[in-house]
Image 1 (cartoon, rainbow, N blue to C red):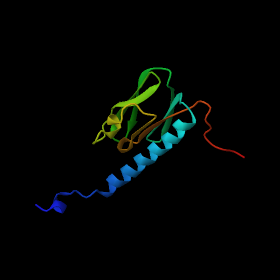
Image 2 (cartoon, one colour):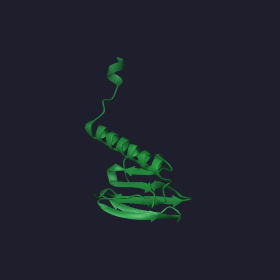
Image 3 (cartoon, rainbow, N blue to C red):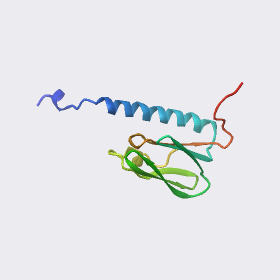
Amino acid sequence: MDYHQSMVKPKIPDIIVFIAYAGAIALSSIAASSAAGSILEVNADGKEYAYSLSEDGKHSFYGPLGETVIEIKDGKARVISSPCPNGTCMKSGWSSTLCCLPNRVIAVSTSEGDADAVSG
């Protein structure tokens, strides 16, 4: 068998998901380096939510594929269930950025004092 025949070529949607996920991770590391993070900001299918990381709990968000559940515990957050096909969001564990792109759920921890915009 030829080595090149056994390789699977990445598909365009896979590449787009990878680039978006990498971008979200880069943004989270910038946010994490500027503050410890005390608020979890969640964008789920175009709707925005905010939760204190000091209050443990489980929160459900609905996207085009169904329900994604995020757990907050001991100042950290993770995805504990999601209907996405590959489960990458659940495998990422406790993180300052959670991203389930197929279900359109993105969560980032920020400091309460962070500004959303710059005005001049």
